[in-house]
Amino acid sequence: MSTIVAISTAPANGGIGIIRMSGKNCFSILEKIFEPKQKQKIEEIPGYTMKYGHIIDPKTKEKIDEVLVSFFKEPKSYTTENMCEINSHGGLIVEQRILEECIKAGATLAEPGEFTKRAFLNGRIDLSQAEGIIDLIQSKTTQEAKASFMQLEGHLSQKIQEIRKNLLNMMADIEANIDYPEYDIEEVTNQKVCEQLKQIQEKLQQLEKSFDTR
Image (cartoon, rainbow, N blue to C red; front, side):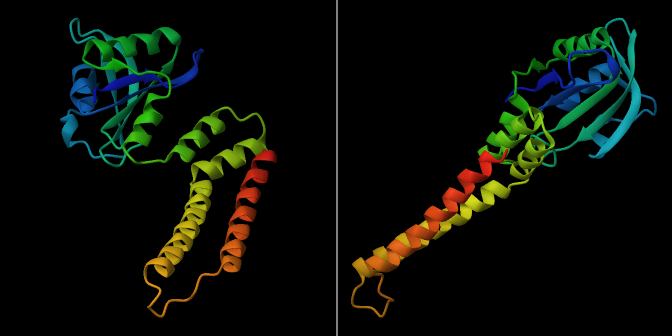
C-alpha cells in the first residue's frame, strides 16, 4: 500500500496542527523534508519518541516551520504501519505547505477515514471498534462519548463474540448428537435448545436496548 498523508486537525487556525503520515516509506519521505535539531538518522530513532526540528523545502532549504515529530514504528502504531505525526503551528497556510511537501516527497493524499480503514484492514481494530471511533468523534453529549469509547475499547465486540461462541457450542452439541448417537454424549433436547436460544435472544435484546440510551 502507498504511504498516505493528511492534516488530522480541524481546518481552522489554532495553536497546534497535526499532519499524519503512514506507510512503508513514511520515514524515508520524512527524512527528505525534516531536519532534526540533533542530527540522527531517522531509522535509528526509536518508536514512541518525539524529535524537535524544522520542516524544510528540500529544493531551496527554506525553513517552513518549527515542529515536533512523533515516531511510531510498525507494528506498534494506530495503523500497524510505520507512522509519524508532524506537530506544527496551527496556521492553515503552514499546515497546507507541510502537507504539500510530504506529497512532493512521495506521499499520497489520504481519503477521509483512510487511517482508520488501514487499522481495520491490518487487523488492529474490528468493524465495531472502527464505528466506535467515528461515533466518538461525532459525539454531541457526554453519554454518547462514553458509549462510543466503550465500543472503541472493544466492549461490544466482546459481547458479540460471547454470543457467537454460545451459538457455535450449541450447534456443535446438536451435530454431535446427530452424527454420533451411539456415544455417551449428553442428549440435546428440543427444550434445552429452546432455552439456550431464549437466553441468546435476551442478550441480543439487551444489546439492542443499550443503543437506545445513547
